[in-house]
Length: 52
Image 1: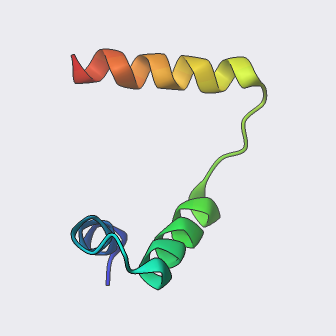
Image 2 (image 1 turned 120 degrees about the vertical axis):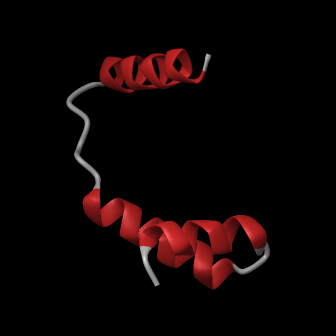
């Protein structure tokens, strides 16, 4: 199952903890470490602006 398919599954089956943890592991495996707390704030702000 691809990450996108797993994400959709988790959204549809919110009580499936095993699927949630699998998705979390996959996301963490591909994550880039943040250099600072301010970098996280910038990412959140950019994402918020894209959604508007």
